[in-house]
Length: 251
Length: 251
Image (cartoon, chains in turn orange, green):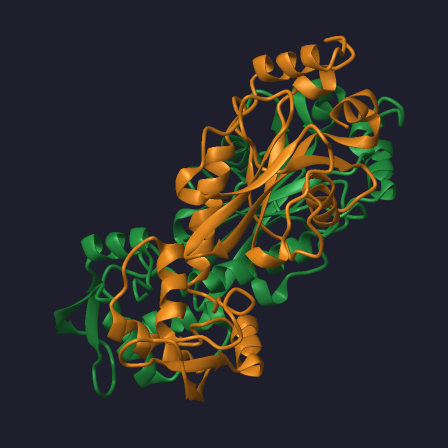
């Protein structure tokens, strides 16, 4: 597919690519969707190029689908990366050689690519990675165990994670990531996993309650040895309202 | 200068541009730095192209300087705009005609440009706009009175303003924008101007005090008819700490 693109490079926006950072929450782990293409020793973020007749936001969704089979994810643009050294000629030349493309003909591929980063936090269970190309591998990998990535993909991943953590101060998370009924400790665990730190139980309870998006149910968690914790659900209407207006209507 | 660039387009990243949204605060107005180039009826954001041998962040600073004479501003990237329709052929063709450049030779200029938006909130008094080109006009314009802008520059400006408002929930503002000693009502006015809404006096006082970046001085504002309000200054060390760690260390 890359060979196809390089040989038809006039159909693609020159020097521009897109990379997707897809986070999933499962088993108290924050995982990230990575891909390993056959010619590479290293893993990379799922990414690709922008057709000249496509909006960049559309291209991002298409690329994610074509590389991983993932559909219907709401992708958010978070930053654009454009250091001159980000893809050195070396990398491009090696790929061209592997693909058996003449260096002169493949010149388009060896220029500096500016890449637009998109990210999403998705329901791990609803996203079944599926390499579209039989030679590729697509996998969920715990963000704490991410191996060496190609180019500056580590920097892109780190920036996406920073953005996700900042977003926690701006909007609620949890809907679609937790079961319909959940306990406060479960919700706290989600926050702790994303933030990668322990939170004070009482502070968390106070703050999360103040947002006003939780409905306390008349049920307790079953199968719990000692004091059974209360179950909650999201008040979807209020949740969406806060999502729209932001957490801190404070000023 | 544009003619120069188009005629030496091989030195520039193809299909990529940068636009800068510079906000300044003065006289209780939030102003934005706009430019009017001689061949245009309309105003635009100061922008330009990315040399192939420059990092995009460096290019942004250079472009702002070359178009407006403005130096030493800390620019933050906020979003990248890449709809296919954002610069139609029409616009490009008209510019080429005006510059007396053959349409075929100027083809580089009529492709779709993806533009990276950068913004800054600066001390109005320290930034003296200065058109580098004698045919251009550079001016501070109240953001509420911005005239028609070229291309999608209105959308870029609106998005920058949204980002600035969101940032108020993440970090303090005011240092460098207010005099060294200021009153709480003056600081509140800054917030109200950026947010474009009235804030409750007591709520504001409580919230801004809670951040812990203000030092109450043993002085009152002079030249005030009735009850003289207290003067404050920023505790720069704490201010920088909050700037670095964010406002909501809450979770």
